[in-house]
Image (cartoon, rainbow, N blue to C red):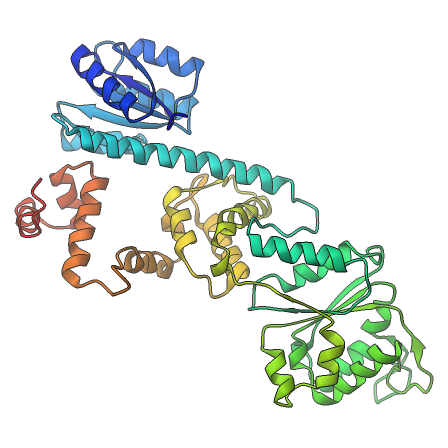
Length: 451
């Protein structure tokens, strides 16, 4: 197995053979050519993961190869090498999409490192495309998008209990997808042709919630000009989802308990109860067990609802789902906004995967929606992410052995990173850092980074 495919282009035979030998030893599948024109022909016939090319060559130069890759092989990363390094040529190369700019004479260790980083970016881009293709298979279906083992176990349990009529209590932090799990249960149950009725118990006071759930008959109270069918009766034959069940008042809990036990509902002002056939699914982001033990929630109602409990893990415990969910939301938001945004940059995805998401999946959706709205091209870049997300990445990226780094450590690592981004060009790095060339030299000497 090879690491990846590499095309090396250099009109200097010795330099070409040296690079070819080194890269083959590293495990790459190497194709080498001294001709820029031949390199263009090769790119037209087969894809390469990475192209390592000299910048200045007769007839066909490295910039033409770079332009060819950007036009026909967008997944391929291009690394330019030149013995005539200038600030202008470096900036021009980066503007045209080069992955890196290496000045001659170069160190082989540097080339190995840069090629490995370019290959990793190419592979991640392809993985992201595969994720988008997987997401397309979820469209229009009540399915939970996940590749997490714990979530898969919960889905297996949900599919097993879905055909039964047992009540289910879904717990977990806000934004983890509790209602989606409730819909998943309904979709896979024998009641799937019936109604799925969702009500947020925290959105109404006691009187309004009783009226919404139970309904009323004409004359039940002032203003009741006619009969009103409650949501419990509306869910007959289907599923009633009670979100934020712990926000329900004690008096309303008693009424709900009777409905569950007797399978009948008594509308406000009525004297004759109505039989109802439905399934109850409840959800909360609070510790309902502790509330029941402490008397803040009726224990008998808790036991009635908690026949099966599904505890949804937070997104921070299933980080492998972040790319899959991000592309799902990207596709949905781009279609709704009518924007041609189809990609998330490697750097932006790295920030998303490193973030803890206290708002869970709902927060991720909001962040992606913002990114789509702000994006000026077809890619969500780090600049399209919230400021606090980028600041968090800078702080956590340099954590060492569980402790916060010193200012000196932070500065040293930041200078190292800027130099890498600038391809080792110290003049360009100094401009990015906002200091003069001499000041940068002094800092490099202080941190023993002159090499």
